[in-house]
Length: 122
Image (cartoon, rainbow, N blue to C red; front, side):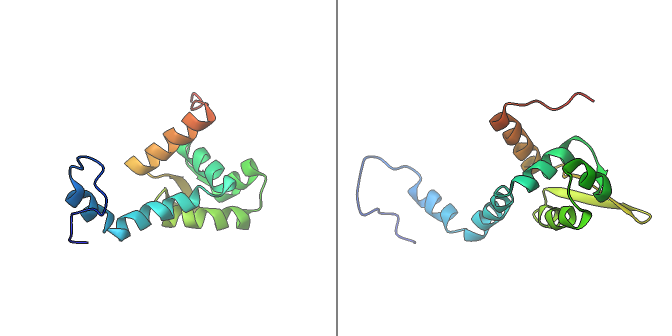
């Protein structure tokens, strides 16, 4: 897409070349699409929101979600692969929490804005 001329001229289009250069970076948009795939599942959103408020192990997440541990682990894996959550091991126990990243914080804020809820007070 090296040509910056558009087939139809609807007024002044500034930065057409810059915009085209950005939209050619398909891999960047794929990262966003992969994160949004996580949002297509209510259970993952609930688990993510829970982990925004405290670090927890699979057993306790399972109890809070009223799900089996394998089912919770099934949802944790893609959240972790997308970088929305992180884990740490302490002995045999693995603890999960929301990643301390701008993307994770933005998603947390977005969930709460859409749901019109506030973080619970610690």
